[in-house]
Image (tube, rainbow, N blue to C red; front, side):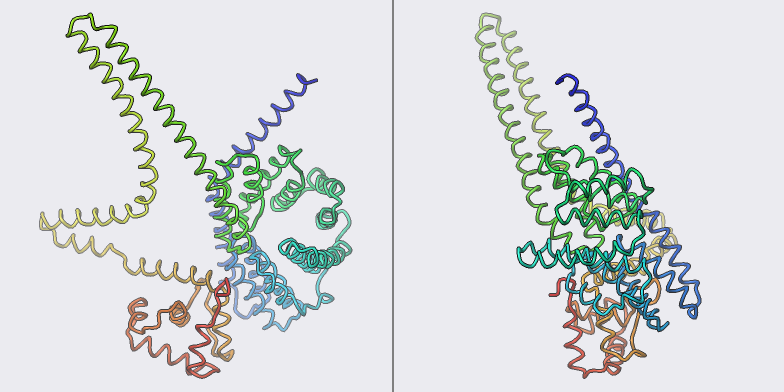
Length: 529
């Protein structure tokens, strides 16, 4: 029986290794999937841009599609389009669309780990006016919010209450979903899972995978949920499922995901520190890209532990290497001593040649070890120098080119070289980076800023913009740069122009000048600090 069981173990291990190979290939190919998604998003943005400002229904449709592309990809962009949905629905005076947009905002708030803001946003929704598909989305969102909140609190009193509320919402979603549909089967299995009926839940999830045609994103959800069910007795099965879920997430450019984090947790538990560390870093990159606050906290709590263990492994390997080196060196010295004793009777020339040869061999071995140690250090140091070497090379190339042109007195060519330096492009890149980083830090800045003005005086970025000049001035002020001269230098305006911008906005504000300054500085960051 044991001999018959061996091929099964080997087959399972080979399958897992193959999946790991595929996962690593897909991780290396992640940039291509993201590029394809960005191209699709660009087409939708172009369609929105070409849509008449009077055709609000078409604008709403494009914004909804863009939100769907961003909702599991990038928090701040998804939030912007969800706000646009809300604004358009307000213009249409369509209550159902307004509630629909609130559900969309609620999803990304929850995905970012902002529980209070999620519940505040979803309060007051008229569920009866929604279509069944939107009702299911609302009930599912409330279910996830309460289950996640209960899991986050992990308190024997509050968690029970939150799970009870989650069960009521998931029952409502199941009741209106079509029997045999993905929503109906998945939600039924998920409720069983959350209420301790593990085996029944497994049956539902396997049924979905084996007998239903699922989208790639649905495959990721089901396999990650199923993979997280299996205990330590089914580690191979659990690993395979989480790898499949992660691959599906990569192919769909899903950044708001737990599958990769769960896989890293499992590998860490199994002692595979190298892969656990690599996948945790990839998971943190996704969480940073999306802007998932709660996810970054989860990953951040484990990453230092794994990093420390990885460092310990490296130190242990180094210690073993030094021990082996000491043994080899000692043996080599013994060989030299014995060789000297054995060949004392040989003529002096042969003895000296032998000693020299032996010492050269020893020195060569030591040099090889030193070279290897130096290479390791260079790899670590090289990482830091790569960042700045590109800029140094550009400056060096520019200097050589100008020197050469001056030497041969081609002064007009010097001007051509200088003209190729695109300071405006570099400055635009600076503004682009500043705007995106600032909005990630202060995601509510635009809305909070506009709350200080009447509707007709509010400033909202156009399509393709993140911050306007007015918004960027006050963004710099919010960052602590209050000196008009400094702001003028950064934005390449005169001090007088910056002063006019500031005074014009203060004059339009619905609060006094001093209160306006106070309210700008009171706009909170994503951490609420």
